[in-house]
Length: 302
Image (tube, rainbow, N blue to C red; front, side, top):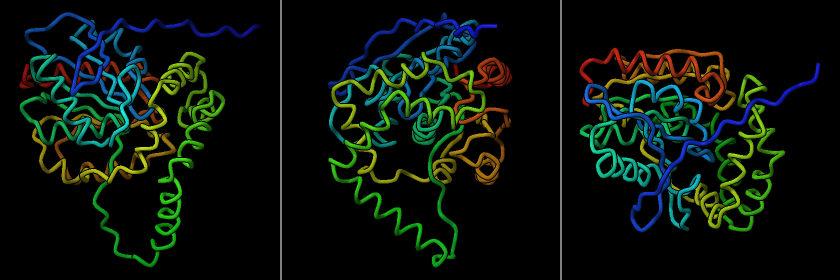
């Protein structure tokens, strides 16, 4: 029996917003709801609004859904500057204030989760709720065995010093942006290989061809580490839902779940049979959990 390719899903039409002299791409789908907060979906490193297309199609039936390309990614501008959680925090907060016009439930995957957490911690007036999907971000290091850690730290510092050289990061960028390497990486971080489609590979490859994409990649190695997750959780006031793809090779979901519960015990969480991007790999389950959780939060700001 011949194999058939999965159907191509069209991107939702978007538009641009000018922020600090840069064009920021975003999508809005669904009707504004007077009794429900809007959703703002935030992609991870190297991804874009396209990574949420399977979620937009269902979530827009219940909510007004906004999806944004962070500065430096997707169809947004890629200026040569320092990139950080603080930068994206200000971008997201200004977008909520200037474009959405009311508090939103932020849902972020990986890097987008960390940026969304930064917003929730600093701007409670903009945040009706927070949903993290395999969120990135460091916790305060509580280990005391410095001797055990010294060797990997030295190796890490050496690698970082090499990659701080523009030529080295440029060569690495040229390698990791190849379609074959993108596919290989996705096959490692997705549990279901059938979810790694040609369309997904192309969605990640396409923005890497933009002018400035190599500079954004290079800036990752120069940016100081952001505020610790436990500190941000200590500043946060809104409801929190965490969805873990527990087969993520980049994140030990169970261990990170323990840390999140330690610093924010009132959270709600689910462990799912998926990898690093559960919203794209098992969108039906994720869409249902998001919808049920948001609708259950009767006191969310809207």
